[in-house]
Length: 120
Image 1 (cartoon, one colour):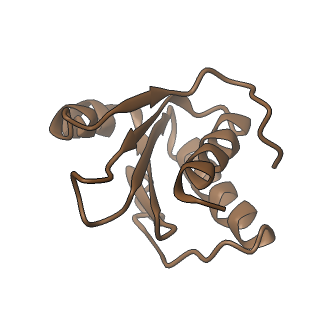
Image 2: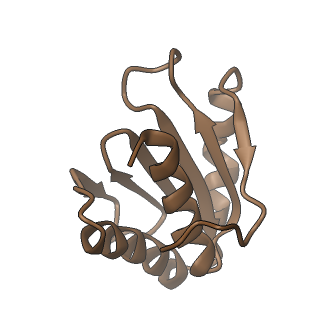
Image 3: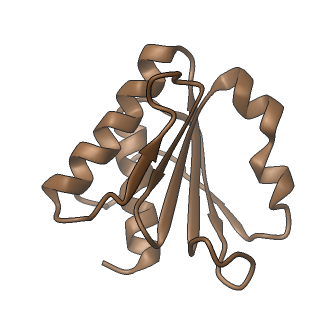
């Protein structure tokens, strides 16, 4: 699975857990950290953890290595490093505060519009 397909996969998993405002930033040529960021948020600590846990579990089920996951216990900003893709699962208030989309404003973005033809 290439980076774009992995980003779409992560967005779909997040959507299945009712994550809100799912955005993919194309970081190729902008950052050396990863090719794509997938950014979303939940409205409670429990929902944020549920979204992150499912991304991790679905990645493992599909043979995708999860290099690292940070911030799970606090459930305010959970970062999941999948190599070519880094998923940022925020609590709503923290997303508004950190404004990653604005920080990386030159990155091309794609807003996830719900159900697509991606199979998870």
